[in-house]
Image: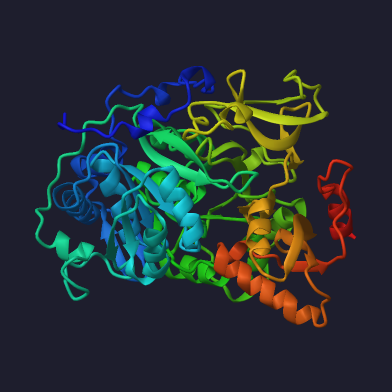
Length: 546
């Protein structure tokens, strides 16, 4: 064991009595007490003779499992020998979906660190909140995204070391960008590294989710959790195979993307296609060029693909997975009619790491999310946590081998009750045990698969000098499911609404991630409030729906 271990994660786990019940009764979920997930997913593949199999595919080229292992080992040595990382240290990663991002991810895991992956779209304000909450001193960042990272370092009293790499390359050991780059440091390191002897229940990932208030919540996941999600949904529902090529659009900083594009394929020795730009057309092009067989994306993308299928070659595609927002029945039916593929719907959560209710093949019922994935249990409860009758609307409660453990956050007791995870979704369970999504039980806006917290957008808008008051709600949208609709009370009369709308939208894009900006803005004289001064959001939602 190393002489020094950072106990931050252990010290900031919620009390054990606040954890959800964890279920490991299935044989495939009985993991050893000592387990390093990076070694299990990568090193074991090489040891078993699969080192030459393609692992990560990108426009820049392909890495086999053995080639990825070499890069991971060199980065791990840089982390430990040059940058002083010790087991338990948190390392912030900032990059688009590319092989170097995955190599950095696995290097941190293999060396016993804790990954905190962030989306490329996040701004310095959001990155600073994450760095400070998780007390992160070290970051590995794509050189093309350094501007916001540098601004974060200026704001954060904790973050003091940033090492750049080029995500558009395959980790070539060249020092052209300077002697302090990750690639230059890697060039001096041997290609071997012994994995840290982690406990199976040692934190290896802090996945941040904005939650309903906009204040970042970090969900702490263990080494065994990373394997558990591989041994549930992809094994029993997706039925992934070693010759599959996975592709998709979700960022690797989303656990939906991490599982679907990296962990799931690696668990069965398949390959993942990583595209930095993965809009509907880029996905279709990638499927055709690399003969992808499995696709992970949001319903919005499947709807957009329908208009492009005539000129697309998707003959290789076998299975499609949808998550991030509810999959409308018309979208399922239209895609099935055009392709013959029944989209696998699913609901997951950052708090549980990945999908826990789904169905595939002949078990799919269009319009229903599905049934609990083997390894998980689910029920629908009322406000008193009593199970409601079949057919009645209630709150979804889930438990299984993964569950919510927030990083030093009082909201732990809101999410976990009586050993069950309350996901914040309203559901109906029918007589056959299928779960049907109804709505979010909070004010979270789900737009194109992204969770957007209204208060966070409000905070950004209120920083503009021309905004006196504002409130944000979700407005239905046929393409995105919902969009951010802001009701703004201006400080002075508006003479040009179009110009002010664009100015406010551009301002928000600079303050927070651009996808969160209000696509619709209504200027009003006052906001509807209760006698106690609270904004009556239901009235704003009625106006937004009109």
